[in-house]
Image 1 (cartoon, rainbow, N blue to C red):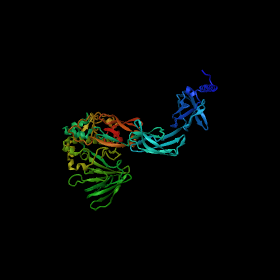
Image 2: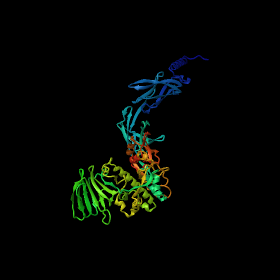
Image 3: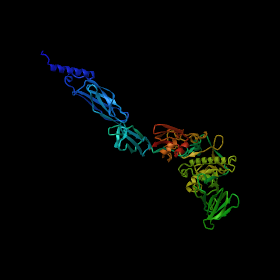
Image 4: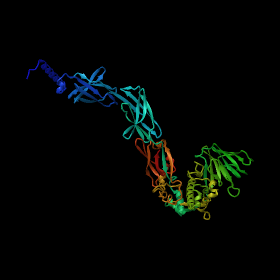
Length: 621
């Protein structure tokens, strides 16, 4: 082997020395790389954007003379002012290293540096986009809600830019709008469908804000129901259906007033006072009474005044008294004053060819029978029609179509008369109890009964005077035996007059029927007012019942007030009383919370403002 030259020896020694130094610095070179002078390069990548607290991966490539450094480590540094500060050590393997960084909200610039090779990488900026949304909440369907966003870049408001508004569809985010950013702020109105949408804002670098949930609740709730009335006692359409099946009056009444007895009672030809106008339903302080024939005005104290022809009496309240003026139709008397009195009674001929009819402005009926008493009550004009209970009053009751009597329903009409009579007798006997009302009249109305559904619907001659209503008048007479001076009534097991409530129709549903009185009103349960399953009202061949189904609605505001919650997404019937009437409704809010409310059936009918307690379902719309 020839001897080595001095130059070759020197080169070998220098290479060995460099290799030793780099090895001590943690840089391992391949044989070919170490054989010549070495050029080192560090290249950093990963610049971009993150959300506050978000991490971003930086990558470094470490080459020696263009070849990957097999094994080494470099320092990660970030810039602070004009200095570079160490942030950790990054291991290099096969020429590459990675590190995750979480810059502060002001962002940071990073680089990699090899102390051994005394070489640094290029700087990479990791910016922080702070996108803060607001506007989460609940809206009613069809309403819009404004979402707001604040956009900061490295802690400073972005002067001018735009963000993309997205909504979530399953697992995918879908673009909804472009939102302009000025001085770091932007707004956008959204109108999501039921049950709501989740939104977010995203910048061009795909940095997203937190999500914002806008819940949607129905603006209205549709109520589907069936039946009409309170639901206790006799169903009128049910009575009609039973009559058409051939059931008798006693059988119909026995069906609905279970265990009560259809019986007779003495007929004392008692007078009952029916309020036809006045407190508390009417706020009038005056009214007119027109009589289409001769009439007489009688004050509480003093002399009566007779008028020989038809005319109008104008009555007004004057403190606790009533004042009046009279004008006759023939012009013979004009505005004749009548002395003030605590009670003004109007009488006229009620029978024969000279029979007249009185009309009261504001009242729902006309009046052939009895007298009219005008009084002052709570500063309002009050008018009561005094009529004989078992004839004149019952003739004028308008609770069931008289036409049913011509289509197989006469027994239903008679059942209605008996229920109506029994109710009125109970009320009259109660009012005439001197311990309760010394004057025999309820002081709340100067009457015994009202002329509407607060008591029983009474229109007087408007009902009794029509030829078409003759079957009803006949039903009244058929349940009164003048030869024996008795009337047909309903007695309870103890022989007292039973409570005989009635209503239009039961609801249509499997197993549905009438209700227990305790469930309807919350009163003590009576043995003869119990729930009765109705299998006949809606049976094949039964008369058409217009109350078989109905719909109504409530607003979101009404429903959330009813349940005392912030909003309502859904309402379900969660419990029913025997007979199918609603007992408990449960509301679900937009957050998923639930609240159940239980009421009597009649309280629910009032609260919902519907025809009956047979509520089938409530549907948000």
